[in-house]
Image (cartoon, rainbow, N blue to C red; front, side):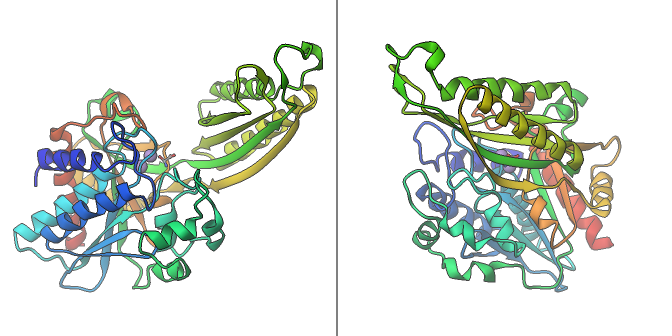
Length: 400
Ligand code: HGY
Ligand code: MN
Ligand code: MN
């Protein structure tokens, strides 16, 4: 199992999509079922027994001589029109590291469990981290009432996928506290490439706040309503989007309006309603909270000025999470000479796994830092380094 074979497996998983010609693999979808068929096979080939829990995570276990467990993994779901490595690369590198143990007939003094999470991105239900929340015992049953763009409730989707929505609470990790959770993931940023390094150790995962915001005005005839009498929801929303962009003044903040929909959405109708998403992140929680308050206050002022109604609903909020100093030290040692630490602006399942164990992450250089984009790209050489480093990490942990 070398870098090339891991990339070939990511290419195969890229064919598991809901939208032919693009990679879109939502939670509990047929595309995800298709991906599971491949991944369960690969888990078994690596000497592991695979099982699926109620929320739809895959769990595969490689027994050790002791009964403690180290968790490895990442997520199998994707954003819309995604790249092929965000998520799957981490699951494939974890399986490759176990495959090498299995091929060498080696056992570690602990078991290794590979987790392939069901829903890190939240594409289908606007949720976040459904899979890792379930394992961390933090799944919110109210999420089961969320509906997707076709009006299917999450409970129905879980059922159709083969899980029992009433038993998701039982998916929580019930064994002894795991030795740790280690996730290999593309950096999704430019730092490693700028340093000319194949891998780096993650220091912390930025905190993030997500909101759904609606500006409501009055739909009207584009030809007859005088400009001064209009209550154009899209004009208000556009002023707000410009205000969000002004966040660029603070290097410790990023803010994004990723999705915006206009109703009724006809060329000759004044927009009556605009729904938009707001995503605010910072490595510092206070900075993020102050900025969220500022932006929501601004939205209110814009609505008043433009004679619009405003509704804001918080979707999710997660504080920044530091990786475990112990895991960081072991990963730095596994990399060796010149190893660096890199912060993560992207969220990862480790955010919730940190509630049940110490977390560590290994970033892999990706071309131009591009991600959440089909142009996402890594090299077989860098992936080979990641597999080697993860193997050395397992060795170092075993020696400890
Ligand atoms: O949005 C994120 O940071 C992650 O890709 N879910
Ligand atoms: Mn992602
Ligand atoms: Mn990811």
